[in-house]
Image (tube, rainbow, N blue to C red; front, side):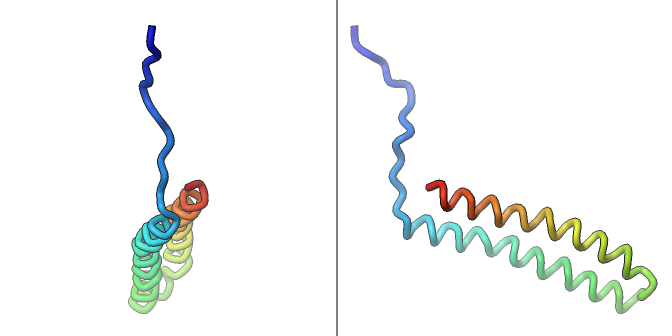
Length: 79
């Protein structure tokens, strides 16, 4: 009887390639954070009394988007 190999987990990824991939992956969250806070600045300029609500929403969405970058750095170090 011969053994049947269903899956192999041995994947060799060049560390330089992983660095480039992480760098490209961080572009999205970077643009997202910039768009969030530019919208808060514009909203506050148009309606100053809504600043507290806008900042609460901005920090919430900032945390969600920043998690994407943190997941990327964790995956980068796992490779």
